Length: 169
Image (cartoon, rainbow, N blue to C red):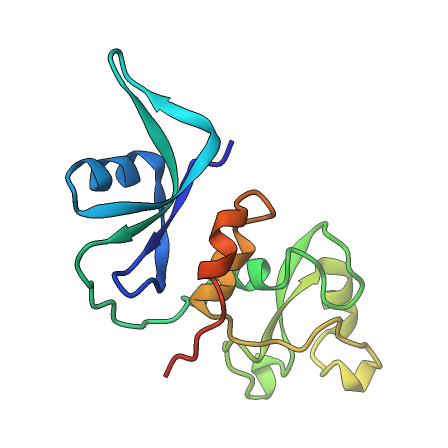
């Protein structure tokens, strides 16, 4: 059972996910409204039954400064779906710089990928082209919406209409 609820701003743009508890409190305090509810499960207290929220919308617009997704080991691996970008393995994963740091490569979204220890060692201090290793996908900088979309994992179909890719500056 998924205990995450999609939190929308007043303009229906996705802000984040929150816990079921926080979503219920926001609705109860009338700071948010219920947009989509679970049709099967409900929340029960001793005396009452409440709909179980899947998507809620804040009553007031919250200005959220766009910071982007943090460049972390976990987020690089999440972007690459926890697979080696050379062979597809899911074991002994490390990070690999496409252009090695010793040759001026920086730690950026476009230069870091997930690689298994074996492929990383094989590539060594060279570029993938120099050792004829092909990438499964080109590295990119993910958006908040793409990370939220990935977290639904077919469980919350109610989220899909609100996670359409929006143009962000």
